[in-house]
Image (cartoon, rainbow, N blue to C red; front, top):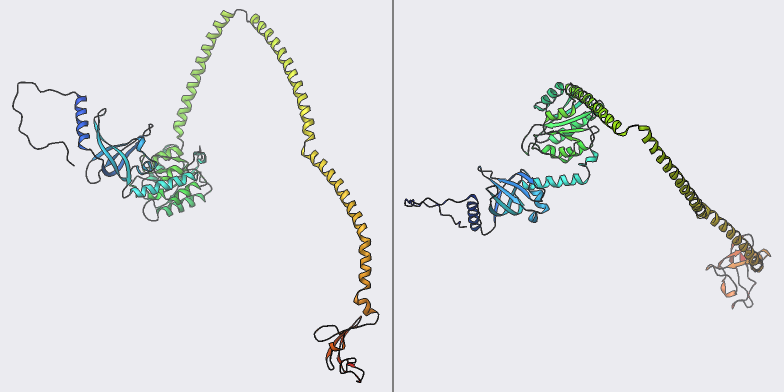
Length: 475
């Protein structure tokens, strides 16, 4: 890219008696802006660390890109028309991003700024994007909702503190607490940065919650980098604070440091000392405030009494005898009361009539009445159905009895009962003909009350039975 600037040394202009022409500030600003616009005819990409993010009510987003290798800062603006939801999440303090756009000169403030229309994550920007996704997820679950935040106790007797015993946080909290009137402070020592810090914080919270006398808990540490505060962005720590049985105050880092524990806690303090001021009431300040309020109240009452006396005196002078005015208003009031009572009686009478009519209509369609009518109809229908079934069964019972008698008369068991028997061969076929059985064959004989087997000794009436002996069977 070639810029329309020539920085090569030039010989000084020859001396002239004419005074050099001076430019106004606006002319110079327009010249600088035009020259800068001509020098960047195409979009360029710029990479840096985001700082000083300021979303405006107009929808625009203002921030700065800081160079990590040298002292250089570039003001950047993304207008609402080109600002996407993804870009809003990417552009956060501490994120490394690359933006596309053109530099321009903003004359009203006389400064260079970069107008960007696109942003992409670089390096740790992906971590911040993951943090934003976690934040959105927890917010969607309602963990950050204002309605679930509990008020801090007005007079806490025991204050639990989750922090490192080696840091200055516990000393600052104790110092402020004792100065403001004293309170019982219990320290749950926890690792607040590095590997295992999240688990240590959860364990400390659990220990304090097992102490029934703890009224409120402060979770805090001093300032640090994003990596130092990572434990307070851990999902498990956020959920542990949300599930805490007592109110929790988050006092992590300095005022500019924001972690997820600040959103889920019932209250957020910029510093541990401010957390102690939020939790422990200042006895001396409250006494002074009460005295000042009492003095102001006494002065206000006296001033009000003096003003009311003056107003009363002026009104008494203007009204004269108040009894006549009161009597006239009382007469008007009596007339309006009488009219109101008559109207109310008429309205009530009409309302009662309408209510009675509606009650009758409602009683007719009341579920109990409808069910009772339908139940009576059902009973009558059931009685008619039963009578019809009895009549039909009686009409069909005679033919069925006759058929049963005929069937019983033809039953083989009746025949067997008269002394007959049924003989079946080995194939289970009834013997009706001499050819159905042969001598020596085992047959089954069924009598009326018994069954037995027999062996055929001889067969009469067969093809070979002419002149033979009478057939016998062996049992």
